[in-house]
Amino acid sequence: MTNDPNSLDTKAEGGVQPAGVRVTAPKCVRCKQPVQARYRPFCSQRRMDADLGAWVSGAYSVATADGPGPHSEEDGQEEQ
Image 1 (cartoon, rainbow, N blue to C red):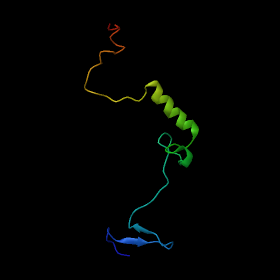
Image 2: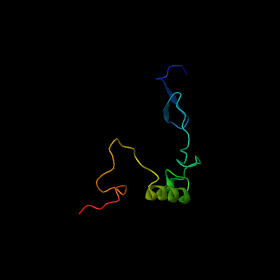
Image 3: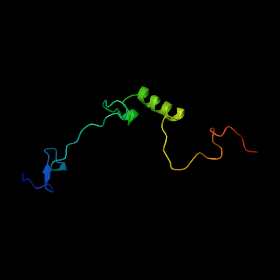
Image 4: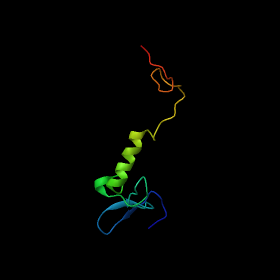
């Protein structure tokens, strides 16, 4: 095998993989444990539910440059 990064490494099973590429098992996005296909990208139903709970409670948010909207709870007033 050469040290050329564009060369291909032929496996005994007949598959071809680019040289220098290491394939690893995916990890859970919350706890870094191995992912189970049924709960992908999580490792278990528990982690999946915890992530959903975080979304529902508003723990995840996207910061914007805009101020609060006209229907914001921070106003304390209702528009009629």
